[in-house]
Image (cartoon, rainbow, N blue to C red):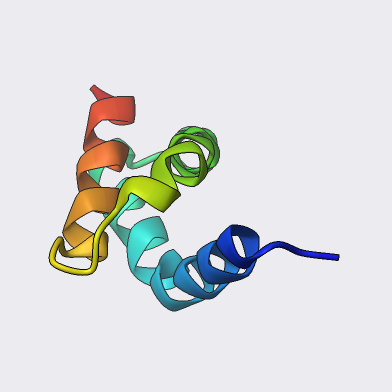
Length: 71
């Protein structure tokens, strides 16, 4: 059975995945590199997801994670 954090994260991932993939592709211009970066970004985001507050913009937060992975 999934816990609340996992369910919330899956919903977040579904909502942002398309935009995140386009963002990573624009930065890398290589499909495999973009996919690798997204996998790492999703892992980092999941680990910290319970610390993201409602006041913080989760989309902007996640895109910062992607940028850090890519750099």
